Image (cartoon, rainbow, N blue to C red; front, side, top):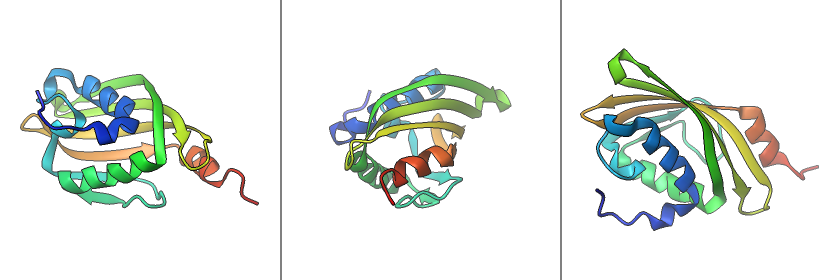
Length: 144
């Protein structure tokens, strides 16, 4: 059980809860950040403004998610598909996120596939793939 206060990350809670549920008893910890190794490599396989391609370390990942929570509020994370590979050392999850862009109120909807590598009952590597067109459409909505 975590004693940390993660309330500042509430806008991303549906995502965190989905990931925590998908990994079940393969990891130790109550919250997403509790199941992330201190030396995680979190990689996004797409270009997204304001989000680095690779984030090294749990503290840096937490800092990046603060910015995410300032910009996007999620309402739901669902349509989860979980695939275990390599005896459970690698988990591939597919899922959808829905919410809103805080600055504009525009609806946010996207689909993801994430490849998660586990060691020592923690996430040590994360590779993320998303529907880039959906993200681009949301980011450019209302622009001439």
